[in-house]
Image (cartoon, rainbow, N blue to C red; front, side, top):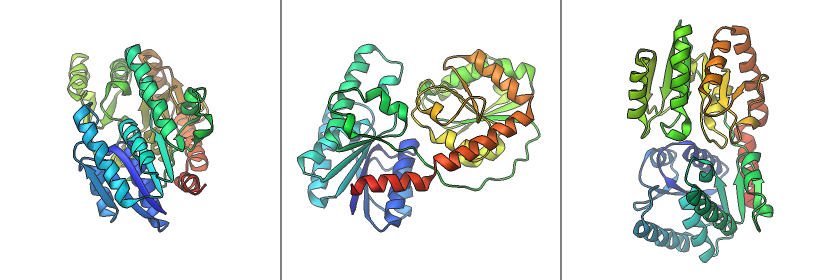
Length: 359
């Protein structure tokens, strides 16, 4: 098959990693693969290193700009007319809308849209949520099939008009990776996250300010984003800067997992985060908020601990519990690793996605 993947940004977050993994796997299955993306970031570099054809759209970016959107739409339209792909697999809201419309106008045989997180779940004014829902609905209608990466994602939209038969659930999947040995003597807690308000890192810092008074430890925050300065200032004002290490962007962030004793994800909204899958595959005990598809990965008390979003007290008490019970940490980590190997394998994700292309 001739497969074209499309995504708005070419940085390397969860959605970009998904596109990279699928494009690489499709190429290994001897399909003709190209990727259409905005900008020339890390995703583009990684794809080129694998000899995958990359087409960059210089005007396509996350921020709203009508003139740039129109220009990008005609670029996508032109490329689809020239290349005539069998499959156009679009990702992220903006590429989903523009790509879906362009794909329909050029008669692409199969348009697949993967949602990596409904933006209407984020804290926003109601008028924005209504508008976002409308455009998400249009994008689903333009696609032939929409992949939801969790049952929760599907459940939120399954009642919308004319979409039920277009929806299918395929979980994100990951493959095994090597870890360095952990030589830390001090208890370490870590998170891998974009520094964005939606990730709840301010809640983590509030919980940490109480935890560190009770237990000597170190907190690693791996990732970059627009909230970094605010979070660093918050850590300073809380008097915890000495115990919090902002590592910034790391190209292979999962290499840090070997340095953690506990993994935390305090997000206000999520879909099905790769970070938890990686932490679980590394055998770490995970504390996460009960949002989005996370409860489909973690059964609280069995293979991890779920806490309510926005609840620094619950997060604090859970960190204390895990810090003081090594046997519990080991049991949760072992159970989560087994669950992820069984239910969230990379091979299963690729097999189901390629089958969707053919059907």
